[in-house]
Structures are given as C-alpha cells and as structure tokens.
Image (cartoon, rainbow over all chains, first blue to last red; front, side, top):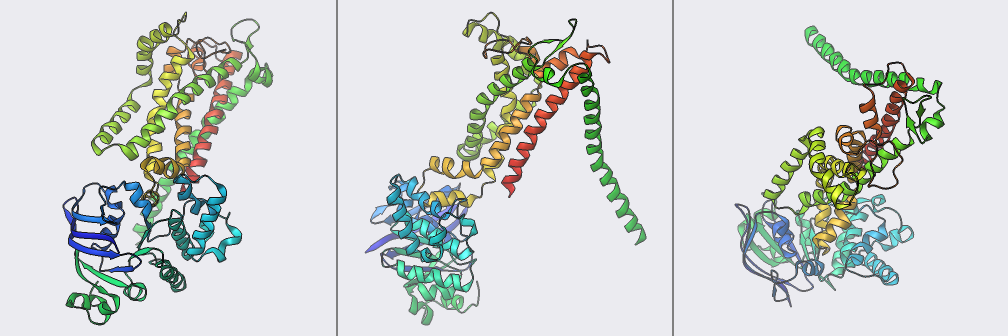
Length: 248
Length: 290
C-alpha cells in the first residue's frame, strides 16, 4: 500500500528552490532512508510530509503530494501532523516530568481519562524501548535523562498521539553508538505497525535500518532503490561517489 | 611592550571607575534618603507613621500617617496592572506570533512611540479627555479618580510590558514551537501550552517592570487622581499616591521640619517598594536564563 505519493514535487523558500521535480512513493510499513549531503533537500523533503515547511515565510510548493490518496493540502493540517509524527535531530523534551512529556500530546488532543492516559504513556514508553530504564522515576524531570534516553522519550511522545507515519530527522546525530543502536533497534520493531522515514547523515545507519534508500543531491532525487542495491550496485555514479565518501 | 601594558592598565582602571561610579551614587542617594527619612521617627513612632490613617502634615500637632497614601498608590497600581497586563501580554503574543510582518513593524513603532510620550503630556491628555469621560460615564461629582489614574498609568506600563514580554516570547527556542506543531497542536494550543509557559518567567519579569514603572510614576497621577489623602473605599474616588505627595508638598515643606523629614521617609517606603519589585523581576529574568 502506498502511504505517500509525490509527483513532480517542487518547493521553494523565497527565491531558493529546495526540491526539483521529485517523484517518489513511500510504502506502508517500510523504513525509507533518505541520504544526501547538506543542502541536498532531504530535510525539506521530510518536513513537507507533515507540512512543517508551512511555518517558513516564503514557502511555496507545486506538484502533487498525496497521503493515503488524499492531497495533503486538502487535509486539515493538525490532523495530518497528528497522523504523521516527527522526531527531531536534537531531543527536545519539554520542561516537564517524564510522564507529562508523553501525556502532553495525548491531553492536547482531548483525552481526559487518567487511566487511559497512563495506559497510553506506558505503551508508548515500551514501544520506544525506554520503559524498563525509567519506569521507577516517571515523575522525574525529563532533563535528568541522558541524551539517548531523551531522544527515545521524544519517540515515545510522538507514538503517544497514535500516528501512522513517523518522520525521523537525523535522530542520532548527537548520540553515542550505544544509544544509536537502541534507537535503531526501536525503529526496526516499529516498522511492523508504522511507516518510517529516516533522514540521516550517517550512510551506514541508512544501510543498517532502511528497506529502501533514496539519495538526494541539490534538490533532486538521484536514485531510489532497495537498500542493498544502493549500497552494492548503485545505478548512478553520483550515488556511488557519495556512499563511498568521495563528497558530502 | 611596556607601553601596551600601561595602556591596558589605564583603560582597565578607567572602566572600573565608571563601573564603581554608578554604585557609588546609588549608595550616596540611599544614605542621604535614609539619614533624612529616619529623622522623622524622633517625633513619630514607625507604626503610627506606616499605619496612621490621617495625613495632616501642617496641622498642629501634625498627623503623619501614610496609610491613605499607601492605599492610594496600591489601588492605582492595581487598577493599572489589571488593565495593562492582559492587553500588554496579548499585544506581545500578537506581535511575536500572529501578526504579518508589515503589521508587526507598524505595531512595534507604535509601541515605541507610546513609550516616548512624556508623562506630563499623557497626564494632560487624561485631564481633558479621560477625566470628563469618567465623570459623565459613572455619574460622579468629579472625574479625578483612582480609575482615571489607573487607565493613564496602564498606557505607561504597556510599552514596557509589550517589549519585554515580546522578547521573552522570541527567545523561546524555535524547536519548541516545531515540536508542538509536529504533535498536531493548533496554533493557539502551541501558544498557550508551549510558548506562554516557556516564556512565563520573562513575561512575569515584564509585568513586574511595568508595575515598577507605574508605582514610581508621579506627574500624570498627580494631575488626574484628585490628590485626596483619604483611604479609598472604591476605585471611583479621588486618591493621593506616595509619589504625588512628595512632589506636591516638597516645595512648601520647611527644610528640617517634621513634614520635610516625613516626605523623605515616604521616599524610603517608595524606594523599598520599587526595589522589591525590581529584584523580583530580576529573579524571574535570571530564572529564565537558567
């Protein structure tokens, strides 16, 4: 099943064109890795999927982008963002307790029953593989957690509002290898129930977790294929150069 | 090499002197105020001074109770706060979050202009427009009331509140806002559940600074509050503030008299009040940085 369908997508920030004629389909329950050097448009691509680019003054878009066969511009933006959650590069806990961080979005969307909220919080923390580490100190400030734990807390917070797709914007860029491994493990388990899009600067990470990998360069989608093909026999010379570390 | 070091030394000391000068002057002012003010307690007990209900400084014997003046200051300040805080914070939210770029610039210029109006001009405008309006609207014998003072002072507090609160809202990391949007929050939910709480210490500081300005304001209040040193029973009666008392009576008080010392003692009370307010504001601003 196709989750996102983009046809000839162009976007601009003021005069600068960030994406040029990108056509791509994102399948349900896959992990799509998106790689490319900086300024390649990979983050702009990610942020258009939940319309976070709209916050940028001077943002403009042409072409087609469908989520579950509906044009995203016809969807209510809050509904879209609830269905398409996002985990940012820097873990961003709110200045609240661990429990309240996860409960926050749930309450915001109108859930009042304490029991239900507690159940959702526990389920989300388990899904993000952090429950066992913090279950005894849910009332501690989220800032007391390590960076890796904070990032998994943010994943739990995203999961708590019951999304369908989760976007990861370089989620491990500030983390140590062990924390990175835990987050990758969580992602691989999550793809059973969710569709994941992972933007990463770490080519090896893309290879480890992605089912398919897309390579962006200067706003164009150069190549999209099954991850093992991209990393063993890429069709485009530029892809080959990038994954071998010749530029970027 | 030696020259360079010497230059360095001289400049360093010069800057040190500049820094110390301001503290030195504050200490001098404080000492002078204390010396002159405390002299009143030779003839009046501190409790009678603070809680005395009548202020008749030139009757025989003089009655020097400043409770009506404290109440006058408090009621005018409270009224100004009630008017200016919601409008000021609302304006800051609008400028920082909602307004399109052009409107934002016009509004900011307007706020700065409001801050630039001298208080005597505001008092004058209040006297000829606001005072008659209050009189006819509430059907009062006089429009020179605490309410009139509160409204004018609200205008004076607003620029401070708006600009400091707006700064506080701007300094909330952009990522907080994006995080809230990414969870599917509406714009209003983002503002009142994420931005306002995150900026709360800065907003409290803005409010305190605004109130600090109101409580020390003299000219406009003196012109439009009616200057009756009576404990106010409502906001629709004339009152007299601590500041207006000093300004109005200092000219006619005999130097070295009980009355003269009492005015300085009022100065100490005022100084203490605004000191507490400023320190509170500072604590909140400091809290924000942490």
